[in-house]
Length: 204
Image 1 (cartoon, rainbow, N blue to C red):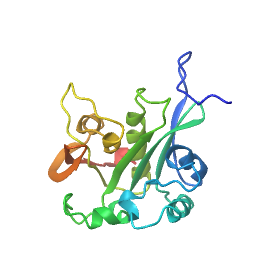
Image 2: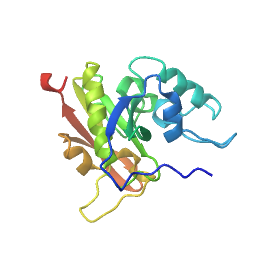
Image 3: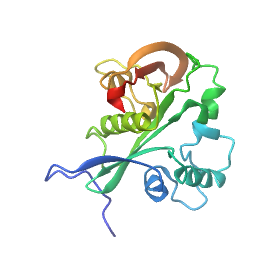
Image 4: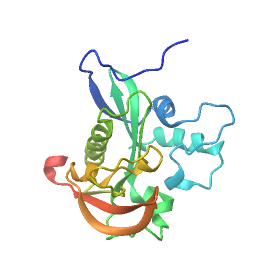
């Protein structure tokens, strides 16, 4: 049986971030449900959670075939290793109807709502790579402001994989985001903030 892909420890790997456009199979490798008939999010929780388990992969396949695509994928030595959902807020039904995460102004901010790093590639800083790649992707498609809704943790706290899918305030701060507003939303019992990064011509 083939071994599960892992982050290499014998050399410095080549790491890059690519749009998910025309890469549905790679998206599936990171986010998809491989068990026949199994249920899962398929990164649909914010887009349209009303869809059935059978409809979700079809929706995301279609998203991966349309510009600009639904997000970005991280690759380590050519092996897909992580995912970040980054798209205009208006494409996330749950955000447009949210009672816990307010809309700050009339601009259609691009939002990084979800990070997934495959087992075997975690604890190597790929969320940082994904977030910076997501910013570059949004900037390349005309975004002027990017948001995220991460959890607040203290310096010694560790967030679990399930509730940490939204990222941490510290992660976003390290990539030029600032606290824009508090929310009444929570993940894993932790408070979430609206983090914002205004893009400039240098980011495009």
